[in-house]
Length: 171
Image (cartoon, rainbow, N blue to C red; front, side):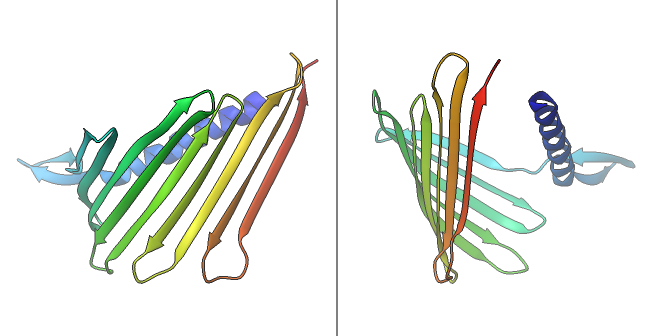
């Protein structure tokens, strides 16, 4: 049952990816023929101050965009691995402009992982998303997995909350 569900999700993901990829190709006539051109995005990253500065500049049908950020591993030891990221985006387009920035912390160890992301849109709202999940082995055939998320757009009354858990025993 689980392998069929996994194959179904993988198939859907491949189809969606192929559909999105085909939208990025643009056709231009060249010598009476129709050729495909990929967008000319510029992507870069550079090691700076124990972390990495990254960015992308490009364009699509919505306009021009730029994305940049800084990613740093804070620790990676027996406590797990903690990374932090600060990022920002700017979009210029005929339908309007937008600027977003935020920060993110990701923690993981061999049994669990958690993340928190706080973001802000200039002229818009701020938001926060926190997620966590874990898998714990009770014995060689039994494990418990649990996870959850909270997403809140500040200025609205109630957050979105999701929780899941599974007890699994292999016979």
